[in-house]
Image (cartoon, rainbow, N blue to C red):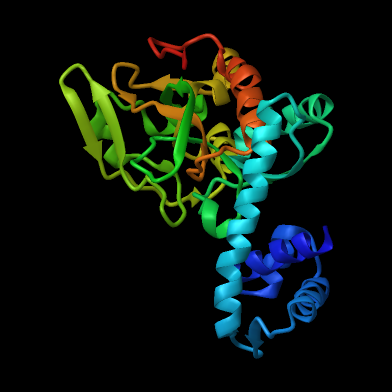
Length: 310
């Protein structure tokens, strides 16, 4: 077992490019990662990595061993999946990423219940509104709420999530209520911004078709909850999934604007790297989120916005 674990460490070091990055993923200190690599090199009787203060490079022996290690780890995963399919319990470490808002409100509360059902699976949950590279960051499954693009990843749709534009009454009283999509160009729009973000323009669907607007504003953030807080405090107009701000709409803290021009809905989905044999732990978790997570979005629709589960 120690050799297999050291192989996993070696593969993760090579894939992520450093001891520290591999340590963060595996929850090990760089010193422990270094020790594991040294153990593996002693076991095989060859140097696998050349290390300097600035660079990490595989040796010729390391390149050959790396490919063999990956095949061994794939074989173990296939074996575990076949056992689980025959009635065995899912087990192992599961690294999950989810958007901040949905992760805090829905995914995080589901994790203890998931662990109660599958006690042999250890869940490592990371919350970010950024688009995570599953392969580069070693993520097993990503829960995403986005307008999904073509991808090499396997996508399991959970639900369609309508979005609306809204603002606080104080903002609308001070700045006026937009009567047409083009009016947004003169307003303070609060946008989710990060590398790869799709909110550099807003796309609205209305009676006369689709309108794309290069909106702008003096405040943006890479955290969706921050945008909601700013909107509640009267700093601008925000685009939000209905489920996320339904309570604020009911209390009147936020008002929907342009109800006849709805933004494109986003899709709640589970994404994971394509594999011939899906790991039992990944299948169990995506089944669990699909079973329980979609229900959390089924708030009363607002002004024609519809909620649809897959």
